[in-house]
Image (cartoon, rainbow, N blue to C red; front, side, top):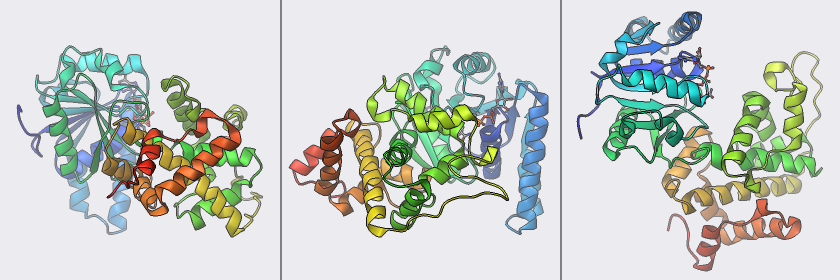
Length: 393
Ligand SMILES: NC(=O)c1ccc[n+]([C@@H]2O[C@H](COP(=O)([O-])OP(=O)(O)OC[C@H]3O[C@@H](n4cnc5c(N)ncnc54)[C@H](O)[C@@H]3O)[C@@H](O)[C@H]2O)c1
């Protein structure tokens, strides 16, 4: 191993958007000197102003002292060129999700950063391998995937590509752990852990809506009150924005070579087409604003339980697949879903509690009913039921 990364290492961030600015804040809070670069000067100004006001609010709420806030801001250099990146021990790229732009950034960086500097991308949907192809030394390149907002969300997915050197993965992971984050290791596969395993949370809710099993507020009510989730699927999609949520679903579907398990819905596609993007446009599955007129949920426990059981069984099936194909360990899949998207329980722990045979029965019943490949039970789940095994012994 060439060296350990520590507080003394300078951290570079490329892209001063939502994620880049959040990551810069996290690194600076830990004590690093940070350089954050953006191709657009006004974006840098906005980022600095935005961060200043977020931190100032923390002082007003007495969550941070003025001295701490001044320290964090002093350590961050908002820069319009890459000169400062010549001193970096780690650079995290968070520019827009475009392969050509990302590759171009890394080609430029490679000529500037020290030879042992680790290079990382925060991409959500591009493969690590595809970006690494632009690099002369791809062994020092990996994915470090933060969640939004980076300073608040504890989870970070560490994603080595097939070209990444193990020591570099370990070094990067250790540093992110030191920043106080919960790291999980994920294989370079579409959606990594969270964005893959979470798909049925949305798709199976929409499917039940499409079938007329229940309306939007009833499904949300069931998932919160009976399922224990913090937000219902429709509320959450409205909050994320249907353009963003649909795009993730579509990308995962395409990247999985059109596996029907990940097929997007016409319902959500139409909402995107119509510009009903959710909270930000005042209209999604719900109406927002002063004259909002939304139906009440039908609080039928029996119906609610059926809705939850179906969605949770499909989530567990997906979590099993991630373990089955060695995308991540049992523990990391559970950590990812509790720390990355606030699920009330790890899905595999939940599977043990429900009983694997019961979960398999639920999925098999759906497959028998619909004869759709989307409902095929995972081979690992079937094997474990056959052998009377549990995930946590
Ligand atoms: N927003 C999220 O919830 C989220 C979560 C995890 C990961 N990500 C990923 O993080 C990355 C950034 O996402 P975001 O939401 O912060 O986007 P954003 O649009 O807020 O920010 C992107 C920034 O990149 C800058 N930029 C564009 N071209 C550039 C270039 N050539 N050089 C330098 N800067 C350039 C833009 O000016 C902008 O400031 C994407 O890869 C995205 O997939 C996003």
